[in-house]
Amino acid sequence: MQNTGSHITIVAHSRSVQISLEAAKQLEAEGVDCEVVNLRTIRPMDSECIANSLKKTNHLITVEGGWPHFGVGAEIAATVMESDAFNYLDAPIFRVTGADIPMPYAQLLESNSIPQVQNVVLTVKKCLNLA
Image (cartoon, rainbow, N blue to C red; front, top):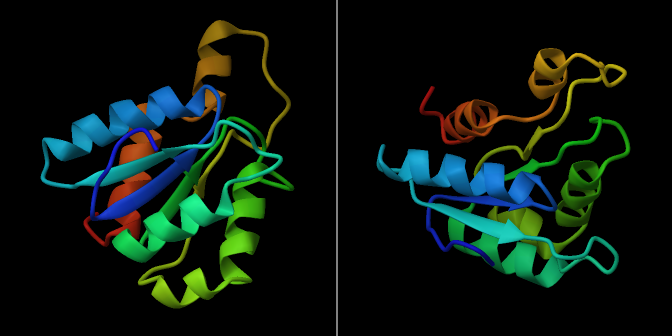
């Protein structure tokens, strides 16, 4: 766990952790308390940590740089849905992922095809019904 909070759980791994922490800092200035879970490994995945955080916040989003299909976020969502943590959800699980396109070569296009801080902020607001 990188950052503790009470309104929403943001689960991320690898490069997406820093993006999630920056988004949590920005959201904190707006009165939203985010708990960021850093998955240091994805196999084995710390499902217990995710479930415990979800039981505290009742909201969950995942952030990853990969494509939306067959990704880590999809696995986290499936794991939550198949556990007793599902009963604690007050809103659907949202995933912030890379764009479903081949990775472009141009720097500007590449940076716009992977999750950015503003993508996480907007998704948190959507999940919490603030947008």
